[in-house]
Image (cartoon, rainbow over all chains, first blue to last red; front, side, top):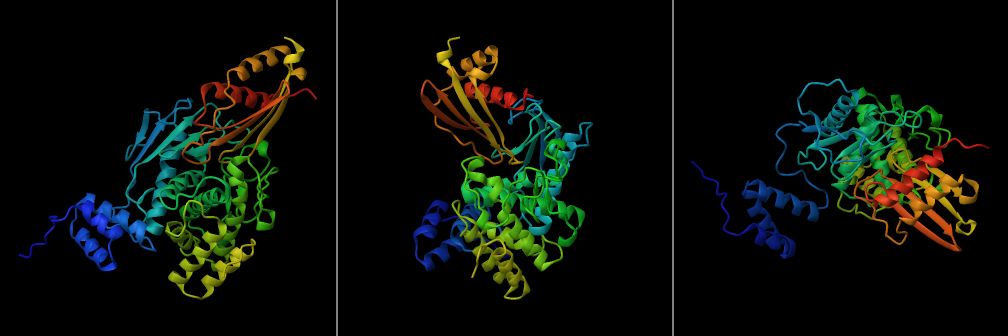
Length: 350
Length: 104
């Protein structure tokens, strides 16, 4: 019987030093040594090294056994304690009588399934991170947010926003903030922040489209249509197809010439996101079919590309989507759609 | 309360998932004395020199407060999830005031 040696003669930390500082040949040998050890610790180290060093982030070496989420829903009981420890539903347990709990559970499940089915991404960190949702945050709290570890949902005041768990796109939006934090980690301010916001809208919308089995031309391209209250007088919080038209006070730009400079909202992150949102819509419509299959794949791979760094803005992201499209689909109709999609919002890409 | 202790406040809450802003301005001379006294009490407890600490995460509300008092201006920016309790009391009061139906 052939025995594969999985014991270490050189400590992982030494190999790490070689990978980081050695010659190309030394690096290759060190990586090979690491790959022969199948311990989780070593695989994590190797994944981290690959993430930092290789242009296209490869799949982690430990594949998830199955695409199954680990969800826990907590109840903040109207307090502003996002770290509530009151568990109201955990993975594989039955539905409860509280609709907010079930909506959060189902929405996180739909988002996990989308990322797994479409891109084989295993949760927020691609390593099976557990999905923690918090419902009933605050009193009549008009918001949902990502706090760095959990997705937190307010009940809304019923006037401006209704129960925020009602929108699967909203849940997808919040979970995607976690995905972004674990990939490009786009700084949440100014243009990188607007790109961060747009990424959340793009995949939030795709979660909704995937769940409905919709092609790009059949999708509504709206964000928050299920949670907008009467006081905002509109059909949704944002329109990716026509930014600035979702409700009466919607002031999102759809073109770089209208880019907003402001100190509010972390530098207008929820306003200028209209520009890349519209670019994605243009690209998805230009390519046609299911938006997650090609346009979504390009956006996802661009988000994972190490050239996208925390300070990156629209132009860098656009350039990476072009390269990614060439890499996956060559120089045909897809590339034309991507270039034209960006150019239509005032972002020229060569 | 002495009229010389008058103040004006400009308040904005921005950001959040919806990205809609709530704004209001308050002039102590134009609101009931009880409101002005309560607001003065809340303001006096806030450290306007404390730096803003943006919390980890995304879609948090941002609060911007500009206070004009005794010929001086003070500004502070804060975020849900990383605010001192005294500042939180002030933003809660101003948000409720902004949403209070006003006599025209």
